[in-house]
Length: 446
Image (cartoon, rainbow, N blue to C red):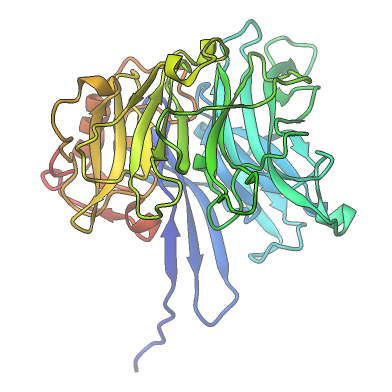
């Protein structure tokens, strides 16, 4: 007698490592055709042994990220009435101490009880659907952590929540920022936990007429970035006349504490002789430079992206003229068009993804673009490079968003650790699968 077989399909996110390069966190979504079963798990993988451990199986949990302190993890939890909570827990509890939570959300579909680490606590909430969370250590006297999320806003700049406010004539995407600050949870000063700042979240784009992240299908987490220098983001301009096509440019908002109620107005980053679309803005590890991609021609849809680097961002307002701006652009002779960019942990190199002969490949480029003398050579030789190069920080160094706290171990050591484990837990095929390879086959071409 032949037993029945029920197929299921799993999709994994890219794994994000902790600052030591010993663990990585990722999500896996499993669907069974013909049924309504949709199981979402957040898991921790040991990069030395390859052991994967359950962190949370609450379907409301999304976007788990390392906080940059010990092995603390922050994630978003969708709750009723359209709000989002920010939860924090210790990854050390994964596989050891769990608590069972009732899944009260009407969007839940996997049962009434879900597991999460016993050390988990709610650090705050925002009364709207939040996504694309960004974190960055500020290194101030309070040891604050800057946090920014994307949330919908109304035309007057306030949060929009369809569950409580109903329909409105105008809704746009906006970047909301604040800080996580340590607070004593009891009379003991040892019991300090990160809590959302009393200033709450502030709309960085209120009154500007700008929208970021861009509306779907183009909007994504690479549309903005944060650092000790502030916020950099890409936004669509409104054309001055009907005959002029709209464009997407990069803007900069200088911030120091991420609690500024009266934030400076966004400043457009113009590049001489470049009038086309901009994308993928990302700060350097020290926050003093920004790299992004830009096209030269606004009317040519086939124009390729060029890599642009702007230095001395903290002195940006001092550069009144475009010609005076400390700008670098990628090698003019490079025939490829990159579409994703990230910084190395020491800020001396850039990693970009481009398609060559139909294959998506990763390239390493000096951050001082003027030093490039020949066309960059790829450092991957197959098509397993993820579309978003920032996910590759699991190979190169510490997590992308907690870039101000540096590990003393170089990216080569992290690569060796992962290869020795024989594990390639990747965002290849955009997270469609996760597979094993022999050490000699991993990362061929590095």
